[in-house]
Length: 213
Picture 1 (cartoon, rainbow, N blue to C red):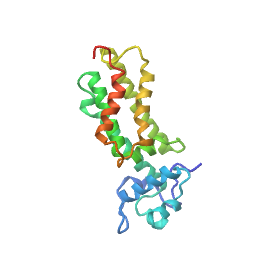
Picture 2: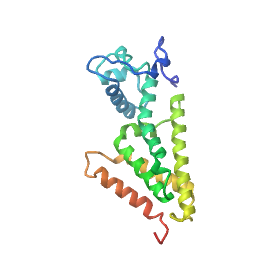
Picture 3: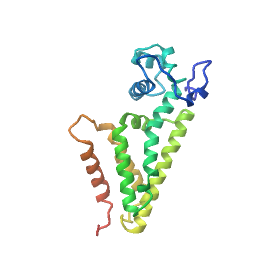
């Protein structure tokens, strides 16, 4: 099992908080994008800094010009998925209006983030919780689960969603449907992002609406 951040000896994770200047021809975002692809292909635990260097076409020491450790790459990558997802829940439109409207906004926003940051969300969904970085990310993800569950309950109580379906089951099914998109949706495929969003929302909510909606 890897250490929490897989830090190279002599390097401190305290350096991770600030932006780091990369080598010519590379920037931190480029390194991060390629690292996420490699993590998704091989798994985070199975990916060494040597594997990352090989895929980047640079030396291992060059990677440390961008980030202090493999664990910091993971932390940055997960924040690329979690920060916009959390922003959906913090948006005023997810907190004002009817519960049904807030629920729909939350679901649409989540779908859009998944489409826009598919590789990063894929990495988030495949976490095993083996490191502190992963466990922290999983707790943030569970907070979003709770937020969705609250919206489902509120929509049931106001009568905009059927009340005969267990809200915990509904929450799992809604997130399960959205999360499954990472396994098959392709931006260059025949389904546009707009039609995917509309189809997913229609499928998820039409069956949950009360009969008079």
